[in-house]
Image (cartoon, rainbow, N blue to C red; front, top):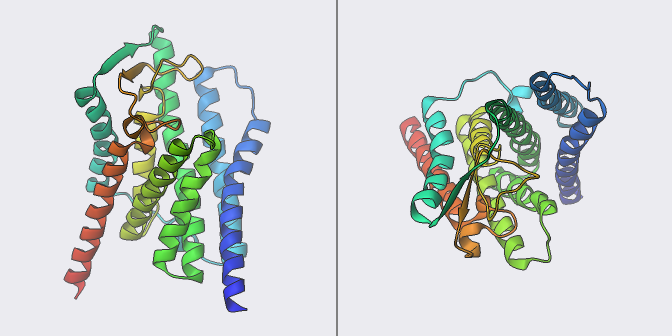
Length: 283
């Protein structure tokens, strides 16, 4: 009976956590204020999404988890300098690998300075909002909720697998290689974010790493893609000539390519070693 209850609560946290993200996004779209100023409109859109998701998490934490917010990592704490370094070094090293070691073509989008500025603004807002919301839900609400039912190992692995599986809605799952890479890459990055959250005791360091990754690789400043996409513009697009799926990441992109997976693993190992050193100092 205890096992059934634990399984039920685990499933509840996962389903409700994912639903919070989807519902916050849906409500945000429905409540769009149609602000004419493009800059203010984008700020309002991403800020309101984060605020709505935060309110849902607060309600769930108080009513279902019955924990203070600080126990799911929502407490005032600035990330230390090493996390800022890691946050920028991680995406820059992956981008650098493709640009300097994989033959390809760098294409600059022919747009005005104003349009470039809007893309940069979008990248920053997208990174901050998605990094905060996804880490608050996956490494805050879901991970801490599962830890209360099981242990830290389960709390790290289960949300990380869900994080990878959750992104499968963005690709054609009939493409087996792309699906496999997404599962491995999504799980690997989820584990990386999880160990950072446990190392720091808050969501802010992993949210920062997540945010900067999204800003630099997904936001529309510079992206590595097989072609220039008019429906998803980027100021710079690096088009690698290779068709090796391990490098391109398949349908999902370089986020789940082998270079990115190796980078996630290096950060995870670094954090685990640092955590062991902390334990030795305590002893």
